[in-house]
Length: 95
Image (cartoon, rainbow, N blue to C red; front, side, top):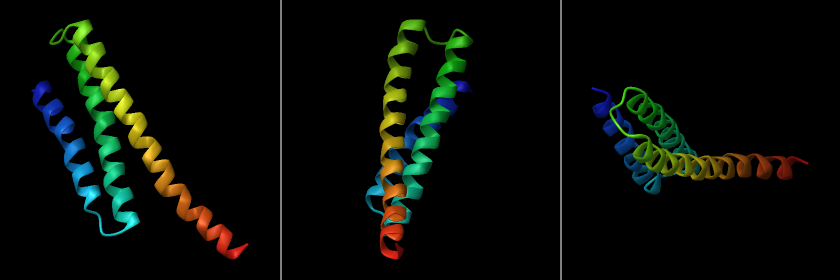
């Protein structure tokens, strides 16, 4: 059951990134990337549970978890860029 949840959340990351690449607006892109980021956090959660219950070994966990953590950092950076820039543009327009 845990492994199925991991599969769902893990594959959802890629699906949402693919949808973001076909976004029709910046806000649509940001929304899809936000979902991908949240799914990445969920994936890290399921990985931790699989490790804690003994379904995966520590070494395998560390490798996969580190990859998921790096991906989460990349997605968060993308979110910061796409969400901050419109605000800066708005402030520059009115100030």
